[in-house]
Each structure stands twice: as structure tokens, then as C-alpha cells.
Image 1: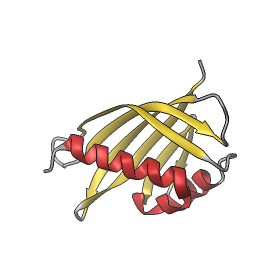
Image 2: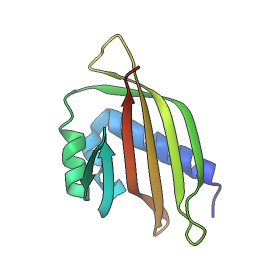
Image 3: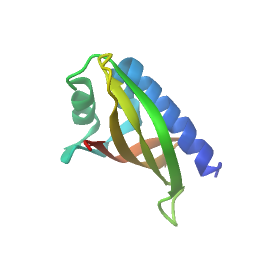
Length: 124
């Protein structure tokens, strides 16, 4: 297995670059069994997850990653748990919103897909 920190960094870079530029292109990262919990609301399945991401109430978003931690999530499979914290700006707003996101990445034919994804804004 490649270094999990390298895989996590590559995934996070791709995910947030795609999210910021055209979040409708994130569908290939999810599967039928994938679950996104967005601000406490669970959403399951690639179509439902993509629908949620595309329907978010902002047009522009820019993520700034502050921390990224990765560790193996299973002793029997090369899966990776990735925790991200950072800030985001929406629609050219002046203030940043703090966020945290956790991904459980599962190997799939030489790449990884998102099995579970938990997103939370930190209003504080």
C-alpha cells in the first residue's frame, strides 16, 4: 500500500479542488452504499449525495485546508480514515466559516471511493 498520508493528501486536494470548481463532478467518488452526513442529516447513495452537494445554497466556494490527518481504518483492508479541518468562503463573502470533515476511503480497483463522509460547519 502506498503511504496513507500521500493518498490522503492527493484525495483531499482533488476533492476540494473539484468541490470548489464544479461539485457536480464529485459523483465518481461515491457509490450506492456511500453515506454523507451533512450537518447531522444522513444522505445515502451516490445520486442523493450528489443532489445534496449540487443543491447547496451558494454559487461559489473556496476551501482552505488547515489540518489533514490520516490513519488506517481497517486491519483487513487498505481503507483510510481522513480527518480535515479548515475554513471556507462562500459567494465572495468577507468572513470565513470553519469546517471539519471526515472521510472513510475504501480501495476500489487502484483508487479509492468515499464510503462515509461527515461534514460539519463550526459556528463558534
